[in-house]
Amino acid sequence: MVAAETLGLPLGAVALKIGDSSLPPSGASGGSTTVGGVSSSSRKSAVNALAKLFDAVAPSLGTTPDQLAAVDGRVQVKNDPSKSLTWKAACQKLGVKGISEMGENNQRNPGGLNSSGVGGVQMADVSVDTETGIVKINKAVAVQDIGLVINPTTAESQIHGGCIMGICAALFEERVMDQQTGYMLNPDMEFNKLAGIGDIGEIIVHLDITPEHDKRGPVGLGEPAAIALITAIANATANAIGVRVPEIPLTPNRVLAALERRNA
Image 1: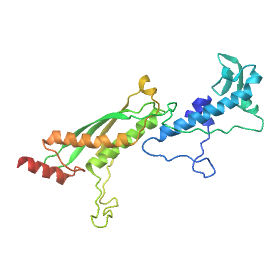
Image 2 (image 1 turned 180 degrees about the vertical axis):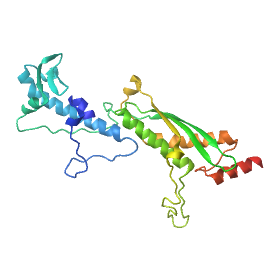
Image 3 (image 1 turned 90 degrees about the vertical axis):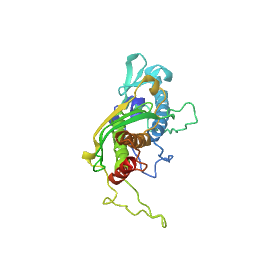
């Protein structure tokens, strides 16, 4: 998407190639910074490539490279669409040479596209059955500031996924380790339960999209959406029953034990 917008092309005109050792190497993807890192390097390489294309096209349009723009699949003189070439015709000016450019993601460079400082607020509405100890999630609301949102649909989907992970961690998932060997004792779906559709409740996602946040560039998304809801659910449960359950997941037996301590 970043390359297509930079080059003034439709998304379908960009061919993505990954996972081949013949391609240039890249850094690791992690820490919720994939979109920021890929966007920054893709943008820089596309800008560099476009500059070389403008150098090749400018003489035929009777202008200088700095007066050209790539818009809607054409290379044209700025503010004068009548002087333009289709993308294909512009690329033919390269002859047999072609263009190959690389871009890097360097957060220490002030000119980079991505930055740090992700933020958000998550809220949970729960019901607790004091006879069975079952905690039911009614509604979760996630408000996230992730800087410039490249694709709102996939960003919202990722936050939905993060909320589901938070619900699973707060209510169901529990890793049981052998203290002597360090092995996990329940590495299966029989004893390490995951949430089903009926366990999730309503999830509302709001992306805080403002010009001020857009100026920061892509910040990061992943862990921020998966962590905070665990605490929100635990806090909501404590508000509901008047006592805190000190461990997660908030299983029925732990909730009942907390109620017994409160009553005692």
